[in-house]
Every structure is written in structure tokens, then in C-alpha cells.
Amino acid sequence: MSSRRLVTLSVNGREHEFDVLVHRPLLEVLREDLGLTGAKECCAVGECGACTVLVDGLTVNSCLMLAVEADNRQITTIEGLTPGESLSPLQDSFLAHGAVQCGFCIPGMIVSAQFLLDSNPSPTASEINEGLAGNLCRCGGYKRMLRAVEAITEPEA
Ligand code: FES
Ligand code: FES
Image (cartoon, rainbow, N blue to C red; front, side, top):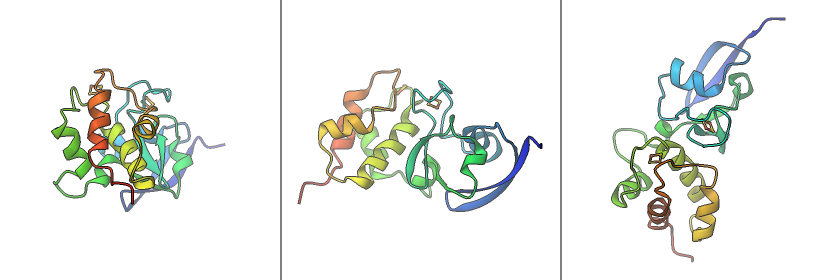
């Protein structure tokens, strides 16, 4: 049986075909074949969230998902959340609150935080904490990140 498969990945609204090894992680294809280096490889075992992307609208650790598992699915990376050169309100808020230190965890944090805000525009502090619980920051900037997300939540109607 062949260890390769032809897959179609829809990434940030564009379709790409790849002939991939069946054990190749989605993260590797995104970074090495598509040059989308926003998602980072850190632990590579699903513990840190640095590689977070959206697959069919849900957050996924792309270091754990195989490219063949993403066949014919919609993938959104940090690059796809902010079309063009401008920053999203959430990215602006992270900068304004000094929540970015070395920056390594930030793309994954932003993807998770944006997912949270899209599904719940008025999260409480504990819901924000919970929403970001899968993303680790070695620099320890959690409080500032929490404030950055809180600052752009919508008031309860
Ligand atoms: S690099 Fe994927 S969870 Fe850490
Ligand atoms: S800002 Fe450095 S790891 Fe989070």
C-alpha cells in the first residue's frame, strides 16, 4: 500500500493539492509547503497550542492532525484571519495591552481567542481563561492577554 496520498486542502479560502506522505502533520504542510509560518511548532505533541489553526471552524492543534485528515476541509490560519496588511481588532488590542513578549505563542493565542469571541462575543473572565487554556505562554503574559481579550468583548445586551 502506498504511503502517499493526494489531498486537497482549502487554506484561507484557496484550494491546494498535495501529494503527501500519510504521516505528514498538517502543520508541516502549512509551514513548509505553503509558507504560512504563523502557526508555530513548539511541543509537537498537542500540549502548547502554538500550532493552533481552525479546521471547519473549530480550533485544532495542527501538529497532531495529519494532512490526510484535513483532506477537503476548510483550514484557516492566523494569516487568513487578517486579510491584507491591517491588524484585526484583537491583534491591535494585544499590542495595546502589551500582551506580546517574545511573540511565539501569539498566533495560536489569537486564533483561539478569535474563535472564542466569534462563538461568544461577551465572554466572562473565566470563559476567556477557559478559552485560552489550551495555549501556553512561556513568557507568562496571561494577565495582559486576558485584559486584551476583555477589552474588545461586547457588552451583554
Ligand atoms: S506545537 Fe502543537 S500543541 Fe504544541
Ligand atoms: S509571548 Fe513569549 S511565549 Fe508567549
